[in-house]
Image (tube, rainbow, N blue to C red):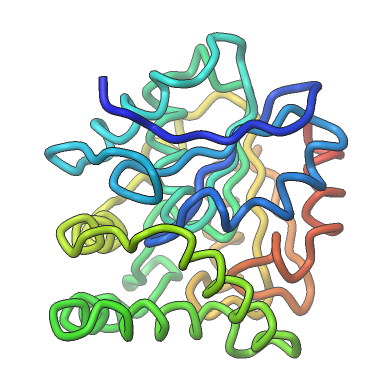
Length: 253
């Protein structure tokens, strides 16, 4: 079994948080401590990120198996952000007996746009992939800037994220490229359609990476999914609007 790093806060109903591309558990810390006033909060480093060992091949099946292996058998709420939401969808489909409810935070079952589905311009992901080969640090900073660039407090949030990232070494390029590949190529719409547990989709109306229309698309294929749109929030609502996100979680769980 590979080593998966986790941090646990608080007591109460269990909720598990999975971060996004190129991040680690530190990005959750302030939010997790606030959430831990109500719940037992477990933050996981994705394989190859932070202090976790990687998996090979870097697939959703392998990632899901590695993460579920360090989690309790007691059913829990699973919250995934961005790439973490893609992983969380795969885990919920594969391990329905352990996941009591699912929260998709600034995530998309089909990350890239097509003729019938709102999403990110695939060329942007291609550009990130190319830029990683040239300058990984610069590519990551550009990605972070896209997440917060249109927010009034975007500069402060970007500064906080940069500080957190520096706590650990960046994932190696092969892991970063594999993560981008998952975002480009994964299509979990069929999985979302058949998920039986309660599902909540939280979106920011100023998110550049996940258009707010994604909520409408999700509602069409999973009518029972609860959609929550946070005004003036971008791709990191747990940093820009933590109280609103926690209120939604409290109502949902």
